[in-house]
Image: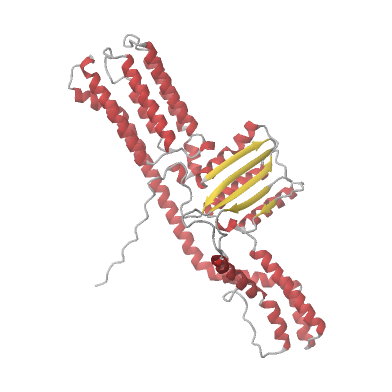
Amino acid sequence: MTRATPTPRRPRAPASASQQRLDPIGGLAAWPIAPVVALIVVTYAIAATVSRPHEIQIEELAVSAVAALIIAAAVLVWSARPDLAPFTRSRAIVVVALGLVAHVLAAASAWQYNGMIQDDFAPIGLGLLLLALAPFRPWKEILALGGISAIIVGAAALVQSPFLGVRTPPALFAIIAMTQVLAPSLAAAAFSRQIVNSIHRWQTDARRAIRGRTEENRDLLAHEVVDHRVKNLGADVLPFLADVLERDAVTAADVKRARSLAFQVRRVLVAEVDHTWLDDLIERERTALTERGLNPLCVIADPERRATAFDSDQRAAAGAILVALCTLKGFDPTSLVVQIDGSGPAPADTAQVTQAFGARGALPTPATDTTTTDTTTIAIVTAAQEQAAAQARTPAQAQLKPRSRSTGERAVDTITIQAGISLPPYQRRRALRPYLSVLRAVFSQVRVTSRHPLLTLEFDADRSGSNSTKGI
């Protein structure tokens, strides 16, 4: 009897995940929910207060209740702004706390004169505020805030039950009041949980497919890289080898020429090995600026090649902001400076280099007992192997050096971008707001300094295992 292969279980989404954190672009699309809900809450609170003057005994408390709900709605809209992402837990607690204060003040303003609780604006407004948190906060947190709020609202209804115009069991009043808060909270929690699980499943399947595709093409890509390098040598090296083979003799000038070519090959390989995705990105933008008739001067300072440690999300976010700056109206093409430094050791990313230029990727080394022409070939072809070996020794030597950091300290890479933008402040903020929202969702710390016309962006990439824990 054959045993069925168990289906691998999908990893669960982290408890602190939200739509805004997992899908920053989708979070931008969900932002209009906050001002719409805030407008509804404020309008209903004012209308309900004005339409019940006979129930209000203390006007100051009634006005204070409406003011507290207006502040709660304003905090919701301000906290949900894309340029202030992510929506933190403390902001959500402030919104809910202000809604509860509004409910207590409204109940006190109509104490002993409240005809019914079904038309009270505070529980309904509080429920709508909780509903608006769905795209921004985890479902467990929304459920907890909604449960606590429902208990407080239900307790207030029990206390008011002897003075209400309708005679019915007090528990029924409590259930009605709690439902006004609990129903929107459950809806928001269900939406947050479903959308987070859907995004997490999609991301997991995408990463698995990319990983499988990469493993299939790894060897093929390595050989293609080597073939590309050999073709690039055709202008100098291959004609020289053909001339030596044709003459069937090696002179002192040939040896000197072979040594010079080997040095050139080594220099080219070192330059290409040190090339990172950031260099390629800046080179493309420099070319685009040149095609527009500009004379760009874009500087990259990454001596330890820390850009190689950025994951796909971080590279996409950093690349998007760089492209946005270079295409922004008022951008000074001679002012862009990108610098990367960090507190931890430089990333060791030479495994791919060794595979591409080392024993598996380089051309076979000729036997040492052949002709002198083969000696010349060895000097040229094995330059890549020597470079790969030198690069591979670097991580091992770095591990032998004493480290000043403690074991539990995080390894953080900080990227700093400076550019001159000749735009008014409000236009600059409006143009960069979507990109800053994505940066704050991907990187652990984002700092923006604006001294016209210089704009400075700093954001940290955590290499300790968890990318961003800010605001959880």
